[in-house]
Amino acid sequence: MVLQNGSALAINWAQQNANAILEAWYPGEEGGTAIAETLSGDNNPAGRLPLTFYASTEQLPPFEDYSMAHRTYRYFDGKPLYAFGYGLSYTTFAYSDLKVPHEAKAGDSIQLEAEVKNTGAVAGDEVVEIYLTQPKGFETPQHETRRLQRASALTPEPPPTSA
Image 1: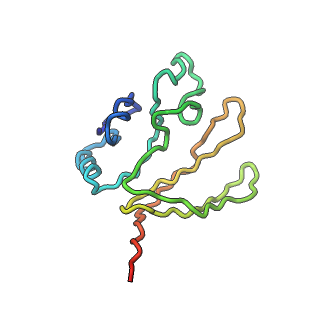
Image 2: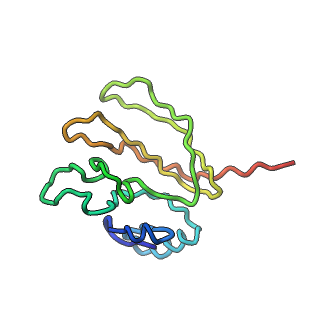
Image 3: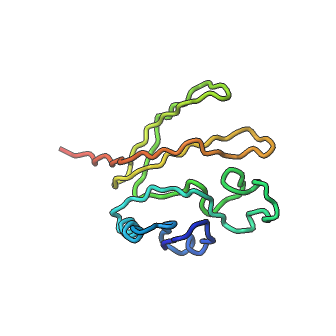
């Protein structure tokens, strides 16, 4: 199923019945080409959802309530149909050697490092997502996006050869 829309939709039927869902958003002039290349495998998708697809409107508070409680990935505490940042590829990736500083003071910048390796059979990109979780407080988000970084042109390692 190919979706062309501008927001999260009720797609429970598609999630249960379609072999795959391609979210094309507003694809523009070359959208047909991009969709065809993705469906045929000539283009390996690496996008991630920029919002949450809820399983039901019952998961959301009434719209008379304008607080952020239980809305968006930052404050939602239920199980969504598809979460913010969700996305698939025609290949797989493995993360290893994560390096995190042992100490940091509030307000300090920190640098994280990790190895990202294509473990599948198809070349592709990966979007590395970094989220911050804070101690609970009044209206404290459950998660905050701190960084999204595309790891481009990752090619799979060739299979071992036998002599």
